[in-house]
Length: 244
Image (cartoon, rainbow, N blue to C red):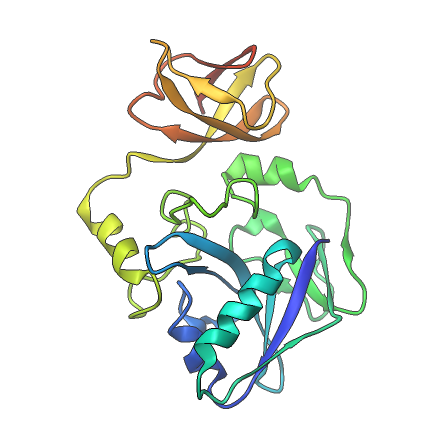
């Protein structure tokens, strides 16, 4: 798996993270916390898991491609906080069968199984894309990009966001989107018949741009859609699409 594990230690570790991430860090008392860090404009920087350790330290489990930039940003925000950030050699093992001792349930959806942290990494051969598509669960670097607003990516449904926790970077924009109006764009599951490549433009029944095709698994896919145009039959490459 392409993951980097950062250990966060120090007396201020929880308070430090609480002021930066989209979810309530107190959830660590019960297991993994899925969360994200945003720009002040409310756009996605990185999504990651926070993992409680027995000694009170916190592990941060993030995609390799985002790890170094995230570590720099966290260091920048640290200021005088009693916090130490250390990249580790730990790995992630995950699966959907019986959970081994010490594993944590993935908080995004029960079908996403468990995650175990230690010296050995890998997974049990699960078709993760099939599960993600079935439940419209976004993936780093595919559905989640620097242009993403996390409400459009379904973070509230995925237990990655808490509107009661107070301030964090990007909170004002996120709260305004939540309270202002119904979302006009976002991720959705579509059914499709015919060949279409990831990244293909989706066209509405009347020929207008309607979105982008993202992860595909069999006859279903995750798509980023403009909801007012995502009605009836749509097309992408040589495929016909409909909202599931």
